[in-house]
Image (spheres, rainbow, N blue to C red):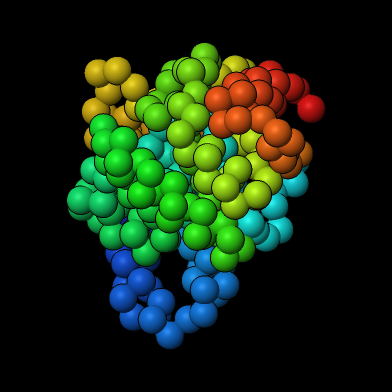
Length: 247
């Protein structure tokens, strides 16, 4: 792709972020929660369109909560893609809260922040998740705990699954994929793993044409007597099957 076209997409994206920030400060205080969620979803869909990323949703997103979405993690784009498919409250590492622009947007979307290195903080976040689920909200987690290359799944951490067990809430497995439209193969452009920098990954994404983000929702599951480790293992397998399915 012509780098000037990528620069144009970057500038239009920054303008869209500015509009989102204005909406947060000027409009959100007067809007009910359902309207804020609809605004966030529409904003995310428009952001993907500006950056030339096609969204494909497979399966049926949950209409309402309580429900916990459990997804694999590939890129900084994952949160934007999942918001575009179905608004939810994410559990994210606390670093994101302090990122310029992105932190403000994430906080406005209801993100719950966690200090991943602290077991005590994990328990605090589990209690917050339980409260959110019992209030009928849709919450989302990335149990890999970090990003992968989108080809292989990392082991799942089970701690946050305890929230769904405590709240007696269903869990929906969600598979995320980035695909090259021309070849149908996995696109590595949006990856944010290893030595990748955030700016480098963003620029690679903007300069790579024909990226499709595929979000596959599986059927909801209930604990049915499983502990959090067994359930996390079964959900990992369910997500892997969703990723390899061609339907």
